[in-house]
Each structure stands twice: as C-alpha cells, then as structure tokens.
Length: 190
Picture (cartoon, rainbow, N blue to C red):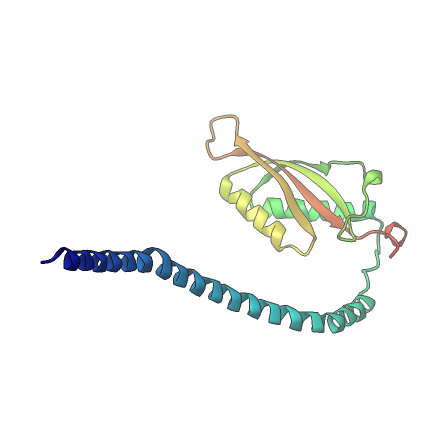
C-alpha cells in the first residue's frame, strides 16, 4: 500500500470517527433538546390560550360575583355575643360528656370586650378547655366539634401523660376558636 493510499484511508477513518463523535455529542443532544423545547412551547401555548379565554370570562365572572354578594346577607344576631356563650359552652360540655371526656375547665381565653370582628365577618373568641381523657375519647370529642353546627375551629392541642396509675387517662389542653355572630353595631362597614 502506498503512502498516499494509507493517508487517504487514515483521513477516511478519522472522518468517520469525527462524524460518529459529532452525531453522538453534538447533533443528537441538540435534537433532544429541541424536542423538549418544542414540547414546552406547546404546553405554554396551551396555557396561554386558556389564560386568554379566562381573561375574556373575567368581566362576566366579576359581575356574577357582585350580584351574589348583593344577595348574601349576614345573619342577624338575635343575642349579643356574651349571651351566645352560655349556650355554646353547654353544647361543648354535652359533646364532652357524650364522648367520655371529663371536662375540668372551659372558659373564654380573652375578655369578651376585647374580641374583634375577624376576616370571616364573625367575632372570633378563643375558648380554653382543659380535660382528662383517653386518645379515642379525645378523637370522638374533636369529631363531634367538627361536625357540630357551631362554628368552632381547633387552634391548639396539647396532650400530656396523666397523673396517677391510670395509663389511659391523659391531661388535655386545647384552645378552640368560636365564631360568634356579631351584633349589627359590631359589624364592619363595607
């Protein structure tokens, strides 16, 4: 084989090798990247179409919202907040008895005069409850509170090992937020 021919064969082999490297490390990754970008572009295009459609609907939705707000009225308070408390506390005590929670104390955590109307439109009063019960009884009690028609929300829950020999009794401290209907004078102006 002549040196000229060897040179051509070597150039051909190097060319093939360069082509394989170029395909594997440049062209194929670029094509993969382009495919991902194209899929991302399609997804963004679909989202933009949906947003454009939603923006067209925004005015009519705002009008419907205004109409609904005009129809909704806050319930009139038949009793001032301080007179709603005894009934609410009696309901909590009944729920405790029926779920076998021994209620030790139930009292407002703050002075009634300091309670303000919250973002919900109701007076938000924290009630502190201390009791002793087993885990299952506590769960039943919380289930009753959640299912009641009164607007109560659990804000804090602390369970400690109970004193004495009964391993199944625990000391429970919880803070419930009661949402009370404000008097018409307590309601914020719109």
